[in-house]
Length: 529
Image 1 (cartoon, rainbow, N blue to C red):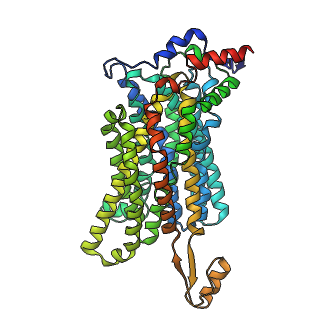
Image 2: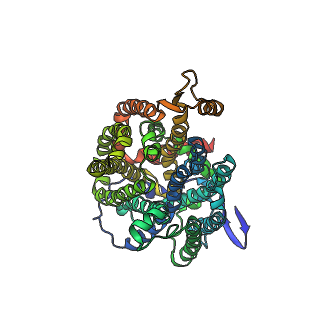
Image 3: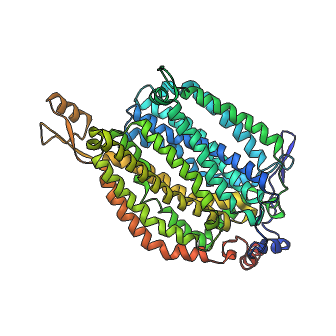
């Protein structure tokens, strides 16, 4: 079936999935690749892929920067939890991934048809956001958090759609023997983009940092403004849309891809979910963030509350960024080896220990910052090293997982397959991120210094405590309580999933194909009936 739209043929075919005569091509994916590894013919594709992943990472960087900005403006953890909902589109992008994979215009290109308008809309939204952002951040009222969250929800929906397109394009853009480089491009590109949206914004927008390090004399404000920076990136995305449209060609879809329609694509998604390997992987990674969410989400804000400046947090973030550039390159050989999942498992205990290390440092932070001199310098050195080692283990796990997903995904249905497998980890991250921010206040218990019966559980009780000349003193800090709970859950998760995850990694490649010879015969029988 073809639907006419703007004088272009938008393919929405309802032909049966995977014709039998193409089985030989699909079965090739199960064979061991014996071609000598080289980048001939793929060098420019890697550059283009890296560029697209950089653009994909910029909105993620902005999303990481806004919690820091909200904290500096005295927004509560409850407000932070509301804003964190804006990152959920990356979790639920699987809902519209089949549309992205099945609806396309042959004359434009399967991926370009989606990528170009998405970049234009992203640029437009950033331009619009630039005119209102200062007003939204000027007050801690709930009414300001809602519009900010809604706008970034839309922006992240577009960024998530871009993620689907680029991940799917990566499966076909590179030759089979170079497909593992896609995880390197993904990791490095997203890191560079995140750096541009996070560190550059916070540092060059900071009056203190610019006056101390970048100016010969003091001036008010940073070198850049949030409004101006959002406006700049809005223009960049619109220009990028024009460049992709003009300079990037695209190969024609395979027979399997041409045979997919919207309904059949959702059926394909369901068939992927029903694969035994995918079910097990889903259970493992839907629970993967239980042990790490508190450290990953709340740590920066807790150290800011303890007295570490926003600039120092961002400077440490720059060192972490350098780690993100080095690790994917250093891990290239590991991600292509049979032992990569063993390395993944070895990182988990060390990453869990970092939660306890951060808790210990946080406890002594106020006292160490008051001392000054060499003690304070030593504190920042230890804090920076702790962040770096934590990020090394975290990013090694991330790169290995990306590589694993790219290897097991059927390239004929790359957008759907990779998006689904990534969704498991994203759902875990989204739920635990919002939950950990919300639970900090829930698990925090305070008591008025002048009235032991007043636990400051409501704003009226806080006001009455202050009126009596007292203050609400923290008895139990929710952050420490969360760290203990998450560490216990992380240890249990590690011992439960260790063997199943290794078995998945060693599983035969054909067990990941949606339509191998065995289940294709079954499907044809079902269709006949």
